[in-house]
Image (tube, rainbow, N blue to C red):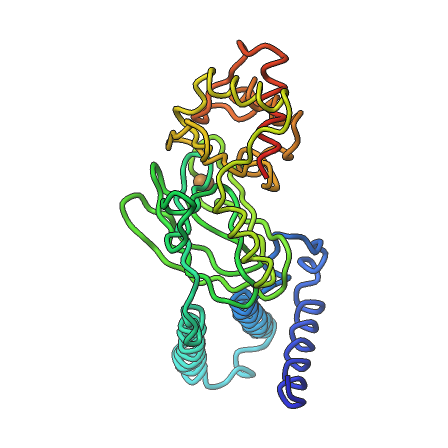
Length: 341
Ligand code: CUA
């Protein structure tokens, strides 16, 4: 970064910091978390934050001015308030036309910027919303065996490279939103929408369904992991491989119990006969940050609890509870699945 762009960057941060601290004292109390539009981790989220601050600050100034005028109009004698016609034309017509036009032009410019990849070929990822989880496909990445790479509830993306996320839905309308990285996009059955995400700061960011989609809408979250480009390539290489062979008798028993219980009719675990497509692909489920779309931590205990009582934990989701599985089978399945990194 040269000195000049460094200075303008610092100025930008300064005014943004001042606006945050001053005008939005309430919001500034929000904690810096993995899901915050106030702490952008990429240029698109920054542009959206700037737009928001300008609209809030501009709206606030206009509101205060109008309130002050209204107060003055109430207490002042009529002869002290001359030129009412000029006020009506100036304040009621000219001022809104000028400010709203300027804001609209700025907003168009931001919208244009949000869909601009700067000439860089974006990484394509397709995300489909289900009640209540996210299927994630990398259409340009083939796994060993030739199919498209498919995973769930987690997008891993390279830092700095724009990602074109193509979103749709399988059942009802959902909405894809990662506040720290970009805007919000509706996921509509039978229709594809696109949005560009850019993650510049490596880290794990949380996304959330932003359109009420039924009883478990609140339990429909996902992670976006921004990795440095070389670590992203490592992740891709690992993800393309089939599930590891069971290490030891307990894991082998877990795999057998998984297949015996019929889990493979809904779930795929590449490298085993399980090839169902109705539920999340579990080939590398042990490497994900959470279970059941952000509902539970990814541990063997939580996974066993989820298998035994999915309908208790997240009622009406498509995964039945399996209370009939014995404790040993349940534990072995959980240990085996957790070994699939
Ligand atoms: Cu999906 Cu709300």
